[in-house]
Length: 196
Image 1 (cartoon, rainbow, N blue to C red):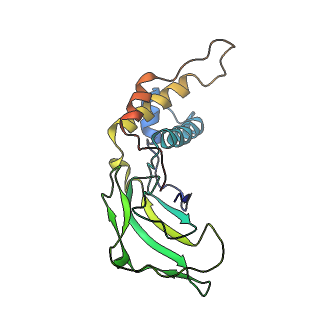
Image 2 (image 1 turned 120 degrees about the vertical axis):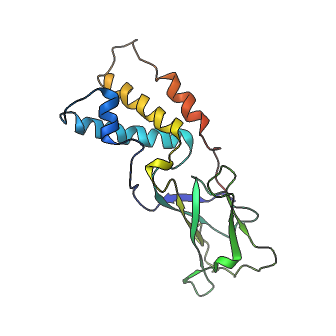
Image 3 (image 1 turned 45 degrees about the vertical axis):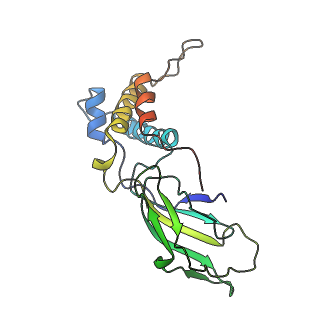
């Protein structure tokens, strides 16, 4: 069963700092800070999309229409912890499932998953037909910028420099390719492209 993942919070830090971007682009003043800030945002989101992973410290929620069977692959990752598992009970109100019903296996790896504890019977759900009767909220990404894998930081710096140097629209037929090194570095840390 596939869930629908929704970001619940705004990231608390970027893949690279403004100071790191200035150094990469050899900018000595703050005159280009607005442009560099936009580039950092674009690069951060681009790397997250290409690597299928969260870089900043964020809260995510994945919703299901029923109790998922078997292990639940939580994406995007890396998943640091499961915050809550909530369900729409038979009375039509949200209830929180006790954490004794589930466990997070291989937290922080590409194999991370939520597993139901064997032998326990999951509560009955509301009879209301909905794709949002079970919600798993979890902490994803890295607790600090220091936890971001070095290849992803290096790729971000390459891309920041590339976009800063090539900020103008190119003439027809002169489209420049992205740095091949950045693509290779992102690929080293990419998660499999899948949800539960």
